[in-house]
Length: 365
Image 1 (cartoon, one colour):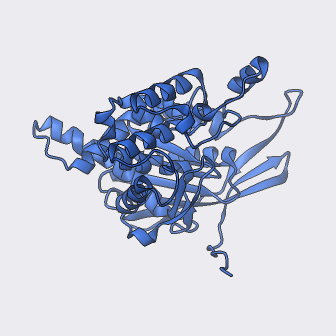
Image 2 (image 1 turned 30 degrees about the vertical axis):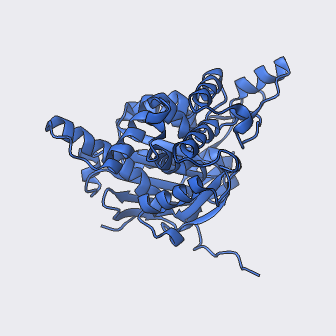
């Protein structure tokens, strides 16, 4: 029988206090890399084998993009953003999914993701009030699935079974994920995600590497345009397109009040961020004087894994890292205060506790 993989001990990154008493502690691993993939800073085990979950969606979208499906079926940048989303099942998300299916000559019946309660409390209340039963188009991963159906069509593969690991499209996805993370094919482990698609696991610093590549690609494309000599590689152009789609349509990547949406809005295209279920987060930061000060050659990639999967701790630690690394302005970071330092109130509105951080980044420069 296979034994579970052992990880290096994770240090405490965040502590919840109720009054002066410790109520909960949250262990974490952090990796910060530059555009060359050099590890700059770490906390815990930067090489922890990590299920990226939905934080891997940009890499999965890249595989679909490289089939030519977006051009063939007329998908626009907003559609591409939804392919990278863990959305809130708001009407705009459901309507866009339906539009993508129509463009791809597919239907909701072809989707192999199921309906579930929405990530948005407001949407959930509305559904209960209306007695609404969600279907596949309501899945927070519906954009990824619609994109995969288009990708299967584009390579001449059957739509049936597109979610299976042995399907020709998923074989392409596996190869693309490994390649963009600078790993051999067998350097990525695969499991089944909550939405029924294969989901990758790889070292945490490779998740940071993926997001550094997204930001670096946008830097490279922008530089080529300024020089009036667009000579970037096809893959670089594709990664930059994903970066622009996510940062141009952050409301489609998340939803009203969601951390990913607020983060990308606050930074106005200077970074891209994406959550993964059960405690994974990744950020790609475009090159600037701030990234150079941190020792980065070009763009910066940040990846976080919270050991117990707590999303509130994940968002708080991610926001704390932006402050520790002094990325952006205080005004930009303040727009995340609701996640970074939320008031801990009881049912009478009395403040009863707080979250504290104990992140000491080890430098590897």
